[in-house]
Image 1 (tube, rainbow, N blue to C red):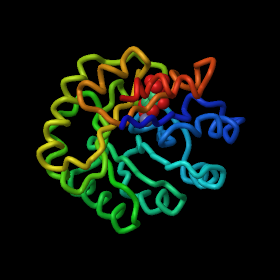
Image 2 (tube, rainbow, N blue to C red):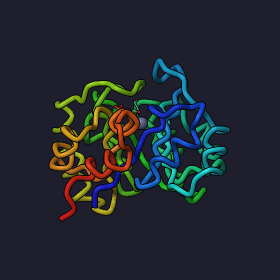
Image 3 (spheres, rainbow, N blue to C red):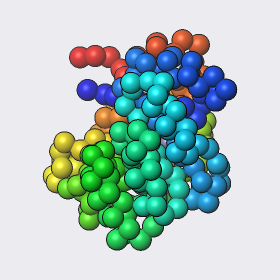
Image 4 (spheres, helix red, strand yellow):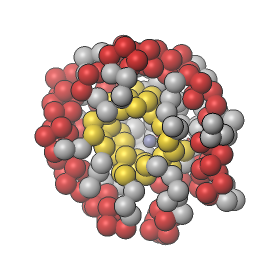
Length: 217
Ligand code: DX5
Ligand code: ZN
């Protein structure tokens, strides 16, 4: 089953509650947290996740594009995140492992995220403890960028690793996902598709979500 995770980065933040209700036919709600250091952009933090938790029952998939994320795991878990993804490039491996351990202790799902430069085998030290791997298909930081076709190979390699060591682990892709690129990432092995502009830029949001999911067979 293909899951769709609309990214609220492309929503209207002055009408966030309305724009969250608009994507309720999707599977997860993707929240992009950026610190202006790990990526050049700044977005939202713990208080916003807490407020979002109060206005929807959707599963909150929180993508942390922040340096040293271990500092904030407990706070985001308490705010209502269902899953946190930490970037492998954001700290030393021991502290990434520590962040995953805290997620487990808080009872939320654990994910690692890979920038385009990061190799698929970087997930190996953590693979058995993960609920999801997030492969970026653009440089993290901004919505509306062009899909990097070169990332299809990384998706395939992560799929091979997951099939071998942790088949239940989900494989999410993020960046430039559209009705045109969705079949490519699904074919490469992704099962959770993040989409910002392709959902919020569409004239009819539920139809856009259904189009990304593809034909149900
Ligand atoms: C980018 C974010 C994405 C972004 C995707 O760093 O992680 O989640 O919202 O936007 P689109 O789907 O427009 O590429
Ligand atoms: Zn994201």
